[in-house]
Length: 246
Image (cartoon, rainbow, N blue to C red; front, side, top):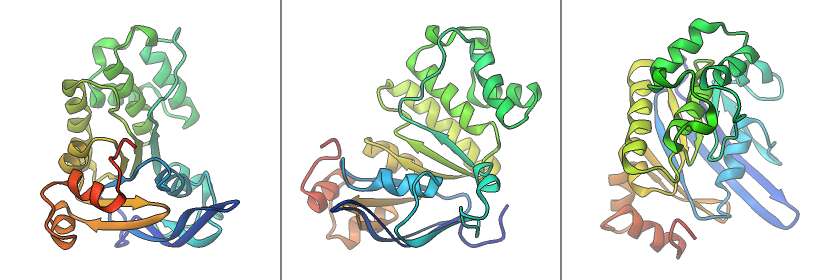
């Protein structure tokens, strides 16, 4: 476990693309073991912010610290601290689930024992020999999560990990994540189009629009501070003028 108060610090970060201010002076902190939901309509700036935290994009101004370190001088170390799972992770259909995890494990120089541990974590042990194209949507998402977990990351960045899944499959993903939080103190940054998902999983919620943070805090805090809205959905519409799916 890190001795620092924050595992992620975003300090007055700005990022523009031509005349568009994608991120406009954002400050954000995440503690070790904290689950944070990053919500916003399309074009809010959340993807750009997450990509800067991942090290894919670089801020025009401000700085981002991961475990107290900057991307510029600690790239290799930080890559090993972060696990990524995207909304539409693509795998090779003609590889088995086991071969897929084994391939990604080789990038980290991990052996088969870690692959087997991850299969147990994601509950796909009975599907090791199944080809990827024969897995259900929920099973593919669990496989994608397994890839993100191979290097035992301190921080998970999940982009809409349960989009398109049925309620049971969604709950299975949630349970895996909560177990990671409990057993390994894993931190999570989650983008989602499901208000219920943010409410159920996350300690804090951040709502962004037009590159700015409009509200931040626990669910109870942001509902109270912003005028006593009845639900996160009501608050979101009030702040952005849009539904989350817009």
